[in-house]
Image 1 (cartoon, rainbow, N blue to C red):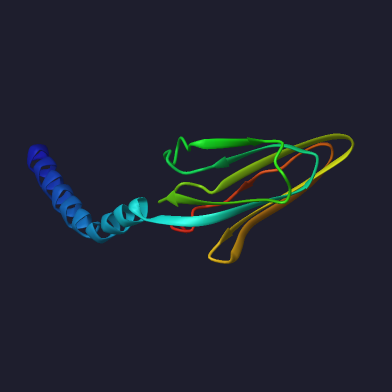
Image 2: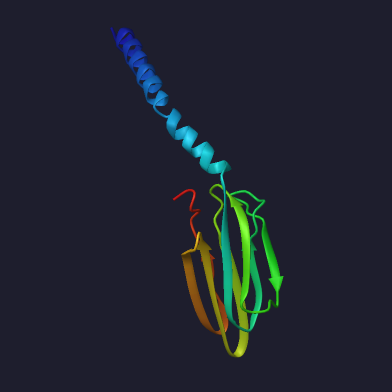
Length: 136
């Protein structure tokens, strides 16, 4: 009797799994499209005494983005990059000044600000990290 119940339970579970997975086809197609789609964002950095800027320049992966650095940038600094899929738009400026540093960053997608931060002090560091507009 136990063997019959187990066999029936396994058959029902397999049937349920098959029906459930067939409904996932549309979701898989949507994810595949989102992962391969590209988009542009514009990074902006403003402030005073900015020593360096690191930013996701594209070309990496979502878990290991390719970061580029700019040392002693002329301000205001602006850069448009093309990212792919769920890569997070990221820009991290660092400012140092014993009399007071200031730094601000902004990420814009299709003319809309999707992330903005500011900081001030002797050592000011802020980061703008946004969720990919493709993923959201």
